[in-house]
Length: 284
Length: 284
Image 1 (tube, one colour):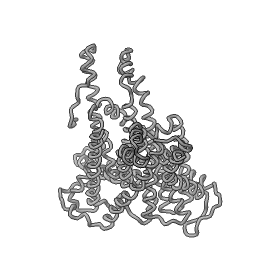
Image 2 (cartoon, rainbow over the protein chains, first blue to last red):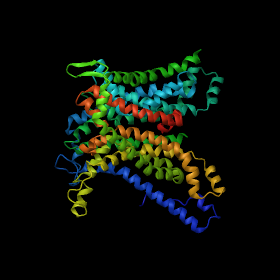
Image 3 (cartoon, one colour):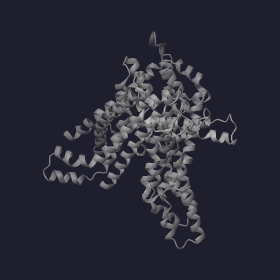
Image 4 (cartoon, helix red, strand yellow):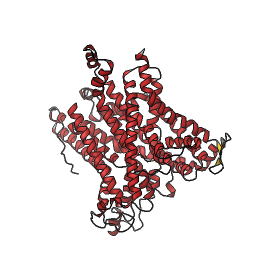
């Protein structure tokens, strides 16, 4: 097992002269084992991603893209071969954008209230948010469809957005709340002492300080939305998103275009996550 | 005065969204679950409690199977995740956040696409089995897909990060001074682990169980893509009743039964841990 980094000798082993040499070796072997184990699990986690990326370059002749038949770039030039797949991807992206905007606004307001104030109904709010985070998507989807069927609401694009806001809003609220709780309130007091109004204090002092939490929450909401399958399937009606299209194609064979689109979404997601974590570290 | 209404104004939009689209639909689903009729002639409320009995009698196998798969997947996830979370928390040093990002990497690929990739990987004539069959190491009719192993493996794979993260968070919070104190008081490394570190990390394991057992048990994507007719889970039945048969009362009764069974477990957990702690763990 060789990872890109070699395990460092633990500081505790170096600074413990009272431990004999036999003991020290045992400790290091345990660490090595754990290190190898960690990479084994990581490789297991990466395996299907590697397969997804690789089979976007597979020169497959049949509809089922499971056996390797040679390297080709040709599918990259034929990304638009399935117009309904293109529509599905566009739907996924626009739904995620819309849901993210609504979710971020609602979730940020909730997060500020929960992190800053003590009010009646706070425990109930926490409980409902907890229910939204922990209840199975299947039950949320089934109950939403029950509502829509009972009221005669046609399911489609808007009901998907509505459902995505529903399951993502608590995650944003919790993320923002964590940031609000950690704020140094004396900075806001200083702004007030220097004559800033409540409004100015919020926009010029408070908001910039909670912004990293808001951005993380928004990214999380986008990721949750673009990836979602279960609730989407229940609330989609005739509208197709990227995951729904893939699920529908499983029986007849998933074309390499899906692998390529998956690879592109993966690359963009990883890039954004890396940029976010680097800038967060710089800010801190 | 203004301070007193501020938190309510902030919570109101998001809170309303949650109540209208999470709580109200449950009431509608409860109502649908005791109705009779069909999609052509419409459904009428007859308070037919027997819907529940019918559903349980007809699908008790799938209920039990889902619980079994969920349990097996959760136990496997704990076993796989704990050593890894331990290594990242205590041994990864400055690279902790990099490793966490690696654990989260699969989330940048859509859930359905990840599962489809496993189908590629494990296909009878796929890149893993075909070479082994050609080499005579496996019989020609050997297969992994459409078995319990494939479905439980897929469930474990898809939800593993949800187990790693809360355990990591709990281990990360263990005060190194406590571990040192334990060593100073002549505890062996094993005693320090079993009597100090492990008990302190149990809340993380509990949170991880909550975040994996519930979605695993309610999952239907893994069974649909990786499993065969003998692996049908309760989620597949509910999905079929709602979206294929349009038998909403049966689907609603099944969803409610599933939810009731899970709620009992969730509330037991939440009471033991406090909702805020679980929410905090869930948001990371």
